[in-house]
Length: 205
Image (cartoon, rainbow, N blue to C red; front, side):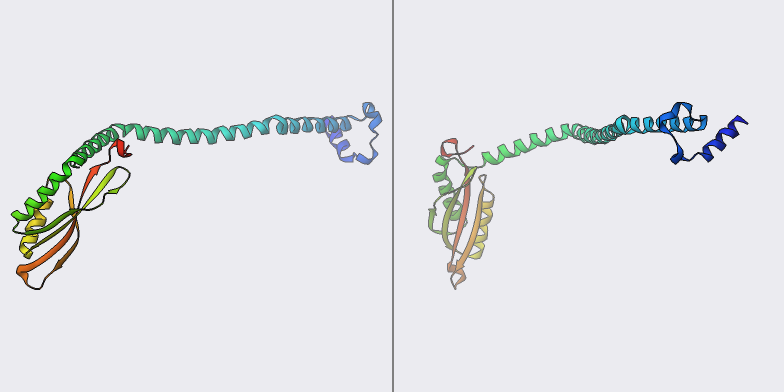
């Protein structure tokens, strides 16, 4: 019956009639209600003052963990491919050295002009002129344009171009211009370009 009496007292409790100055002589129901409010206030204060911040910290740690996992997976993938990268770099360095070896030194340019002249004559062409044009300097190499004017037939021109393409040095042909009405007296002007490595003294790396 005591529990039922207490519940009945709580139901009949009018908060407007409470005398807060005499809380010590309140009925049991009133004191229980006050203690309940105090406990709820303490729990709410503990949650907002301590536990809520801990939840924020936990969420931050979970997000950081996910980021670290992604970073680890990426690093693991890169580590697995490290040997492939090393092999690729070794091949690239070897290819670069080979290409550089095909670039003539500055002192080899006159010999290169003689070589072009010889290949033109061996192709049945009449060499009108072979003139070295002003150099074009880039970051790591120097472009050497050479104007070549020859006369001959289409067949002679084709043989000459194939011969130039087969040279050990890198030589490319550009800006073909062919003039002449008679096939036996055609004149071809073409710009040959070769390249040499830009030396350190000239500003190279």
